[in-house]
Amino acid sequence: MGALMPWRPFRDLERMARNFELRFPRFLEEAEEEELGVAPAIESYVKDGNLVVRADLPGLDPKNIEVSVLHNVLTIKGERKDEKEVKKEDYLRREISYGAFERRMSLPEGAATDKVKAAFKNGTIEITIPLAKEVGAKKIPLEVEAATKAEAEKK
Image (cartoon, rainbow, N blue to C red):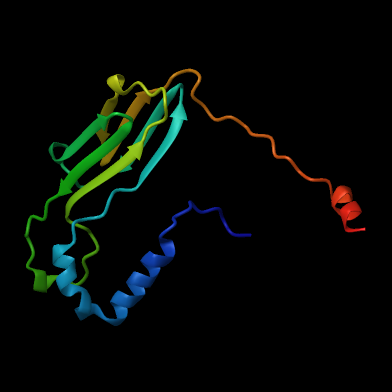
């Protein structure tokens, strides 16, 4: 049995793009220069009554990152700057995206948006937002139709 993997809805599209790029590398060279960068991977969870949002931003200078909240939307903006230390023609492989990015996330009702805290350490930004006590997951009972009832209707 295989190991559990996180759900990445665009995994197949990413794989197709890589395969396409391997077969037609010259076709995408111009598009790479204009690429705006890729939004960072994030995770969010509830811990000790707080919503914690973490985003991986390796290699970014904290001065180039902005965290804001407007209404109930958390926004992480930033820019990975290309230092141009190496000429484009000298690259053998280049997978790191440069440019501006923006990632937005809706916050649950009851989030204390006036008490947001953000910390940057080892290339990861961690944002903590206090939640109201009544905010939390609620289990919903699943109604299951009995098989005997379905069989009786067939007769």
